[in-house]
Image (cartoon, rainbow, N blue to C red; front, side, top):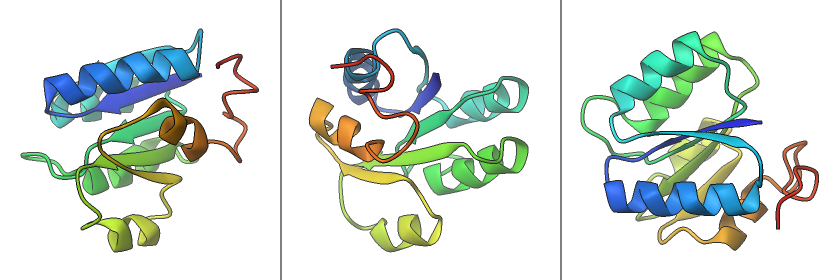
Length: 125
């Protein structure tokens, strides 16, 4: 499984990536603090899951999800953000999950629980 993690806040991104690697042991995690670089990567490389912040300069997480699904249908998206402001938009976008920061391992695990990417199926904790 390949997971793309996108967050302009480098501390939040580092924590998210650390937890993703704990929960989904052995999976490849690619990280981006700039959503434009994430967009380019996703155009050229297959991913399975996108974990992204929503408010970002230049390209929101909601827009990144749309662009990702245009080139890779079936990619699951989990939003990670500081407020519940975007819950309605996330529901309309059919996001797999919505995590309000601070991100926890349990929230990450639960966000993909009912999917083929469940941490139990991926050998995680």
